[in-house]
Length: 392
Image (cartoon, rainbow, N blue to C red; front, side, top):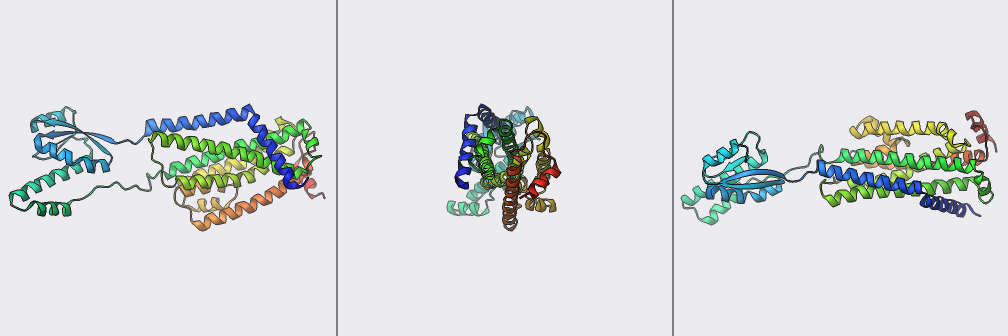
């Protein structure tokens, strides 16, 4: 049996085992429901709907002003709730009682101490236009000329999204923690799968039909594929729920960040998955796997901690170093991309370094796995592992 066919069969076996595993299906469902629940909570608690402003219209002039202010108010995401008043005194009393925030008519714009400033600006501009129109009409200016002068002097209002509120930091944080959790779950699945096969002696039967290196490749590919499916389902649940509720505006960097997160999950799992496979192959019991995987987990946790610092300072020197370090790059690159601080040349160099590091580790993991997978009993020590690697 050639290597590709053997790896394919091993990968298919892993996929089938995961699909039949209640633990895998339940964990996937829990993650999807948890992310959907978080998206619902954010939408309900932190949703950014229109700002309601209670406005008083004093007489016919106030009704005209509030009617014409609806369009610019909508552009600023303001919902004007209009209440009519016959006199200025009645509107003033309503403001003092807290029933309304702003009142407009033929006189000055009346506003309470906590009234919305954007609403004051919009209503004040429309009121000024009305006074100017009335003065020009009284001066005998033709209506067409009056409209032309008003159009040329009108100042528009538009909210501009700044770097602080573009959502990039939130997307960076989410992409980092999702990748971190996905790599942990998939990595431990690789290590526990290897240990289980060794402890039950199943691996002794399997390697009679295929080389240990091909078995390792198939195992990493199969478990990595199911981990990718989990990640896609979780991301789809979060984004789908958010878009369905419409309570949160997704920043422009969302799609690019999602694609980079998927790419770096593949690259990161090739790196960490092989390391977990090596950790599993040097022990024979599940209770020993925690100690053997500890160095990999320390590297993984350390890389995640560094990435959280990079997410808050995406243009720092640490961010550039983390982008080029293969263990840190899976978390750092999507975070920097979400913040708009990732130059193209650094991204390309990071991908090249990740591929080179993954290829080297896959080769190394294959040699370790081939020489250690049949060893049972006490965990293999580091010196013994080096001796096994040097052996032909």
